[in-house]
Amino acid sequence: MKKQLITIISIGGAVAVVLLLALTYVSFDISQRAERVKESRLALNSNSQTGEKLALLRLDLTAFEPYLVSLENALPDKEQLINLPRDLKTMAFQNSIGITSNFSGEEFKSSSNFNWLGLTVSADGKFDNLINFLKVIDNSRYSVRFENIDLSSNNGGFKGSFVGKVFYYQK
Figure (spheres, one colour):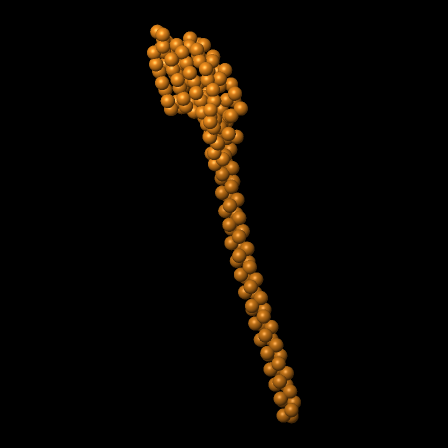
């Protein structure tokens, strides 16, 4: 009887130890899975917030798109600068002055879409015509900034030398 009792208690104890080990393992496994569920939930919330922000940005872009073309057309692109010498000659002819123009140096910044080419213009004519020529350039579709303007008297007229930059938009 004692042997049977010890055997029953031993079997019961072994079963209890096995159940305790199984319960510990299941508890550990459940806590790991719960942690993964939390991480997945956080990632899902983050992705959801990112999606919402992207949707808002897309709406903002859609609202802004009509103005984007105007901004891109505010400055000519580099290929359109090919027409600048011809346009300058036309402006000079309209203001009864003679000119020569040429491009010099270029600045290209990869971090910015706005770059410039150096521009030198020499002009001959009456003072008022030279001033009107500069006004016409200022009101043209080209963005020109003259950094050096030199006017001098020349046989009853004036000779002007204008050194500056013409800006363009790099797509």
